Length: 319
Ligand code: MRU
Image (tube, rainbow, N blue to C red; front, top):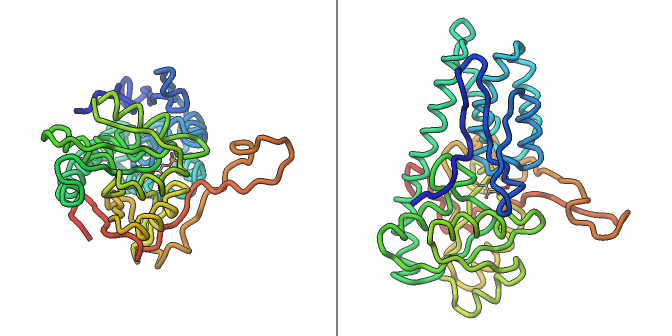
C-alpha cells in the first residue's frame, strides 16, 4: 500500500499552472512542498535533490517542459534543464519524448497531457517491475527472508511503488514477512531519510544499517537477496546507481547472494556500449568534508559491471 503524500503534481491549468514537488531534502523531519513556476525553479530542485531518483527526475522534467513552453523559449529552456544532473538518463529521455510533440501542435494542453502520460506510465511500470521481481525475490527469501537495498529506489523516486521497492510493497500486500535492510547511503542519506521513512510508513519491516555494515549483515545470514535501482544502464547491462551499489554487488558475489537491478526501460541507454561511457556526477566536496579545505572525492554514482548482476528486472520482464 502506498501511503505517501503526493510528491509530484501539476497544479492548475496547463497554461499558467505550475509543478508542486515534495521537498525530499527536508524529509523525514518535515513534509513541505516547493511550487516550481519556472524552469529555473525545477532545475534548482533537481540539482539540490529536492526531487531525485531517475524516474522521478524524468517525470519532473516532463512537467517542466510545459513550463518551458509557457515561459516562451522551449528549446533554450529545455536545453538548460538537461544540464541539471548528468547521470540519470531518464532526464534526457523525458525531455526528448516531450520534444516529440510536434511544434505545430505544441500547446500547453498537449504538452501537459504528454507529461501526465509519462507520469502514469511510470506508475504502471513500477507495478510491472514488482510483479516480475516478486518471484525472484521469493525464490531467494521464501516467506520471511531478508532483502538489502541501497539509496532510495522507492515510491519517492518514481511515479508509483518504486523499482527496487516494488516487490517489497507487493510482498507485504500478499502476506509475506520479509525483513528489509536499508543502507543509510552516505553522504546524503537517501536510505536513512527516505527509504526507511517510506517503508516504515507503509508498515513494512525495515532495519536501517550504515553502509559499512552490509558485509556483516550478509555474513550473519540476515539477507538472502540484494536489489537496487539504476540511473543509467548501458547496452551491455553495466548499471550506474548511487555510489556504494558496486560495493554491494562485490559483497553479494562473495557471499553467494543474488544481486538484482530493477529499472524501467527508460533507464536504458543503448547508445553507449558499456558503463565506462556513463557520465558520473561529481558533487561538491562540502557534502562530505568535515575539515575546511580538505581535498575530497565525491562521485554520486558508481557502475556495477553486468557480470556481478544476477538479473536486470524491467517492466517487460527479466534479462
Ligand atoms: O542521487 P539520487 O538520490 O537521485 O540517486 C538515486 C538513485 O541512485 C536511485 O537508486 C536511482 O535513481 C533509481 S530510482 C528508482
